[in-house]
Length: 203
Image 1 (cartoon, one colour):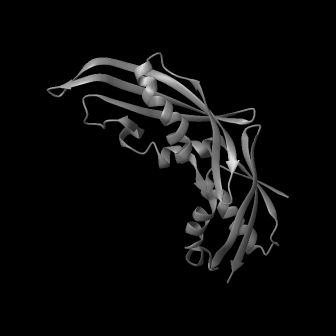
Image 2 (spheres, rainbow, N blue to C red):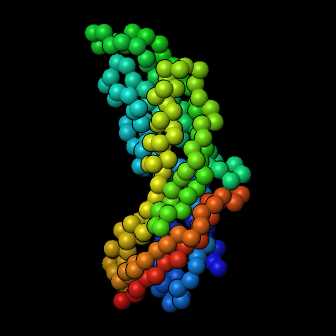
Image 3 (tube, rainbow, N blue to C red):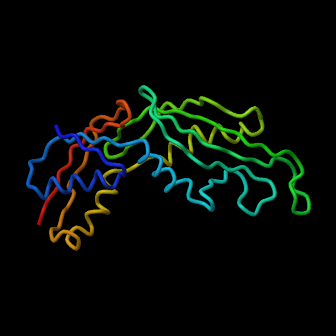
């Protein structure tokens, strides 16, 4: 069993390529992913709008809107916690202005990591903290419980194949991923630990 620490999903996949290039036999590999790597995944896949915002309602030009930003990921016991800031202007749009209330709040949701065949996923969403506004919470709850964990998912095989598509150009060797399987996925201390089987071909 090999222990590998990297800060970005693509980097741990690159390590698997290096192992193949070194002609190591196919075996289970233990990969440790940091909270910062998951945070960057969220920023890339969801919080990728202007100023790093995700608009739950409206957009940057809407008088009335709700957006979330500043995601922060931490590990607590066996769960992954995501903290987000949200800001809302709730009310009625009249002549280009939002007549209502402005709210700014901090929210927290947590998940259990869940290993699919090739996918790093998440289940058992639990709202840890919401705003004091029932109207705002009506919009935040589905975002935190469904949209956010859905956008945190990482298909490890797809990412690896994207990386390997340029392997001949960058390394002089052509690597092909035949299969990848996640056996387990769990939080241990300050790492998300994955047991991975990867079969690669080198030409």
